[in-house]
Length: 331
Length: 290
Image 1: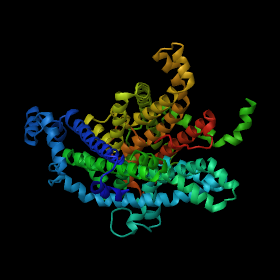
Image 2: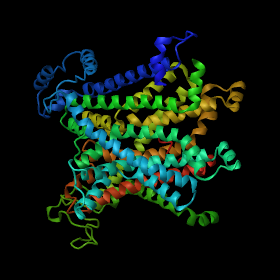
Image 3: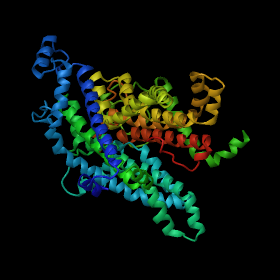
Image 4: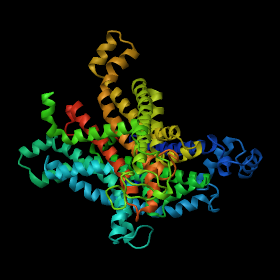
């Protein structure tokens, strides 16, 4: 697909119509940018209009003059549209202003913390997928067996256990009682174990469920009966055909889970384990009433989610032969 | 009745979940009368007492006391009150809002539908937890603001479900037939299209209740949700974290209450779906919630 990207401007098309994926790509890209702008507007409205930013920063006893002076000092007395314009144009160059709390540019602060969060998310999702796919397939192929019961239990418990509580229980059991793993912070590989496991539980629950049900759907399809009738059985049938087709759903849902982890669930785990990531930074930003830092965090997280969705759309279009076929007809 | 009794051994799991959920609701309603102590009454002489069955415990404080000598049992009961109030509140607000917007978008289509889809995509890209936390912080913590903050994201799943439902049923022959005989739009939606939504709506609301209860506890745990003197399970776990090594009951008990509530709601939701939707007996039990 990408190879045709480079070919097109050179060769040109006899039909004169651009390939169908160009408007598709441009449309999705424009939409993605629009969504990020909207997210910024929402955060701006929450932080600037619902309550005076300066009043929140000062003690409750502060006089109106003191509030007004701080507002003038920080530029909150300017027209709202001008402030919003500064935010939108500034964020193009990742300039969100200086963090009130740390007194350094807020954008850089967030970018510094980003790798720690991304590593945590990547390892957790890898763990969740590595367990969920085999478990889900086993459950789907051996309905009502013990594997099936385990899969259903894992998916129910996974979505019901609050991550912060699980984190404390694991610390209590493995770090305090048994003393085998460090309680919090970063450093050695052992520091990764508890946060990664804690963060993996929720996506593990949901993905197990999704693998199981999409495999059940796939195995019930007509072509599966045809395979069975024509003597194709056992592993080839399940893995080569079933899992490959269910794979599109599983991939999409995995992408969703990554987005959900980035958009909130890492926050809790980072707080519990004192993990120096974006989530912990965001909570500190709110507690310190650090508006530039909060806006920087939310914007960068939104960009990540939107980029992820964009890539998922592309992957989805590339993987599903039905979508590919319609695009070929379009060219 | 006899048939119901015979089903008990087969359905004990689901029945136990439903019973636990009812217990939580009852505890929430009756908390002020059931609590042996005032949940906020401090007692320096009775600090960090273990539950009654453990050495050093007393039957006066059945489940022990916390770092300020407050009775854990009373706090658990009042915590149930907060959880149920916020869970039910958010589910009501978001279900009404989501179904209304989704139905309209699905039926009217066109520009309005495009705007709604774009709104849904925006909300999906918001870091929900942070936005909720910021909102509670800016507006000031109270039950109402937590309900508002958690509703920002919650309407989306209802909207998507209603929109999909209306779009598929709009082209059904019975809807065409109703239109042909002159049924107006409000009656068409109310009598012919929306009744299809009822059973998935109940399933979805139960799943959402479980999610919201955990979300409220998470906000409160971060210190960005419910604030004292109100009691929340999440807040209890937050306070108990500092006594992790010395007082296990301070985090274990509220966490257990929280997990069992969410688990029960998820099991009941699964059950409702199996009973009400024979087509999906085998199918996805959680896929509805995104």
